[in-house]
Amino acid sequence: MRFVVAVPARLESSRLPGKVMADIGGRPMLQRVLERCRQAQAPAAVVLCTDSEELLEAARGWGVEGLATSPLCSSGSDRIASVVEAIVALAGGAADRLEDTVILNVQGDQPFIDPAAIDAMAAEFERRLPVPEVLTPVYRMGADKVHNPNVVKTLVSADGRALYFSRSAIPHVRGVDPPDWHGHAPYWGHVGIYGYRADVLARWPHLPSSPLEEIEKLEQLRLLEAGIGIGTFPVEGESLSVDTADQLEQARAIAAAEAG
Image 1: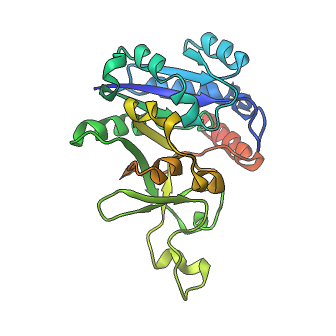
Image 2: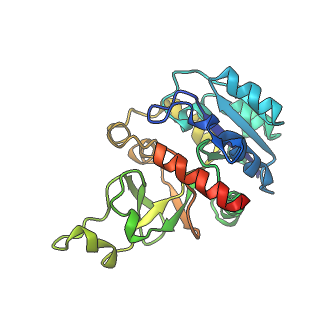
Image 3: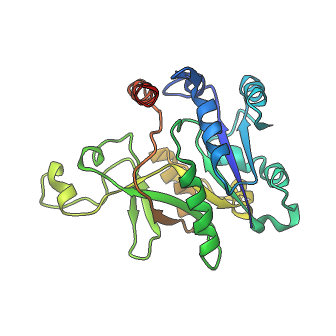
């Protein structure tokens, strides 16, 4: 089984335009993401997927392969799926054996992604039989994040399957004040990394439209609504995703503390 990290990125972020090139501790955020991905041991390659010539040129300067995608891609997964065969080729895989390659989707707005989390996902794929279609890590969420709509929650079954993803707190604890919900149920946060068998991503353009994906603005709901299972596994801690100006300042504070 081959592993390759694909980082989807664009400059035209709706909530924080240009964020992937925002300076964090003297380096652009995207450079930090790519550098951390390259520190992982399992992937055969790291590739940037983007519709921006500026980002492709920057990636080349940092020694990272880049693939040009359409500006019409609706999500990071859609962007990766549009060049899935080229990604598999970069990992040394064969176009007629897509199921033998796993694509690890790391978002371009996670400047402190832990390379060990990438390797842990690869190890989970190798450990499980049959090989999962999709895997994603989750972490036990603290009370301060349960009702934060910028933090994605995952409802997990007893055997570790993802039942649903939401920006709302799930499950709803009936008859209890919302600030106290965390004491009555486990809340799992989504780290924001996905591992896909390449053959699953190749089916992405043919999946039916997903009302749930459109409502929540969460691409993984397209898979669940189409009947494609998503397995989860627990990890310690979380990885900051920068979606707002406040989170960008938080990232800069973390970088300053690490340098300090």
